[in-house]
Amino acid sequence: MQELTHLEDSPLEVEVLEDLSPQREPGFLWLRRQRCQLKLADGSASGEFIYDSIGRQALDAVVIVPHFLKGDRHCVFLTSSIRPPLAARDASRIAGDGPRHCVLWELPAGLIEPGEVGEAGARAAAKRELLEEIGFDVEERALSPLGKSSFPAPGVIAERHFFFEVEVDPSLRVTPTLDGSVLEKHSKVGAFELEVALAACRTGRIEDAKTELGLRRLKEMLS
View 1 (spheres, rainbow, N blue to C red):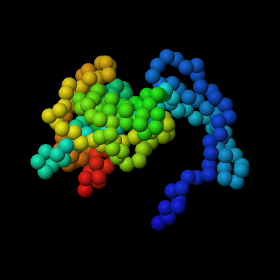
View 2 (view 1 turned 90 degrees about the horizontal axis):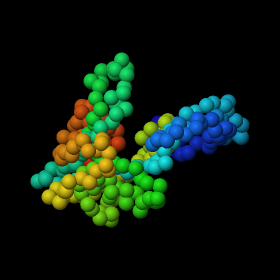
View 3 (view 1 turned 135 degrees about the horizontal axis):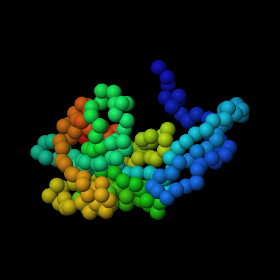
View 4 (view 1 turned 120 degrees about the vertical axis):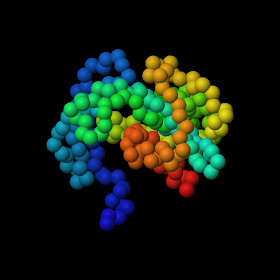
């Protein structure tokens, strides 16, 4: 068994030799194409390689776990998120994972805007997204970090997720303000027992990775 020291950062570094990115078109995302090499621990360099990744102005995101107690059972609020890329999947590549669809049940989440800096900025983003997607207007101080941040897709984008948990009162929920997009206009909000939601993760009925991670962290916190 490897010791924890093996989890320390490697001395490897990525050196960008040339930016080959195509001219940026208007849009939410852009392609970043770079010619790179690795700088090795002994001072030498690897062979060169081309690497494509995705850029985005608002890079990082918050994930919020709103929960409440109903009797002796812990419950959470989720939202149904419409994800067009899922509908665009090549049907021939689906290998036993069910029919093609474009809706996932997820924890509320959203991007941290460029002006929202540090933990205070992340809390402000979490407060905003919780009201937009679920309908709870909470004090920023009520939002508590839930574990450390994580990278959801580091092979493609440098986005980092910051997790928060907050206890809410279902009787105080209002109509979500939404963000004005067509996608959120057609979303739904649901309350689920935590154990039911975790079971849905195990059976594949909830397929969103950040949601399963947030739910498991909440379960660990409450245990």
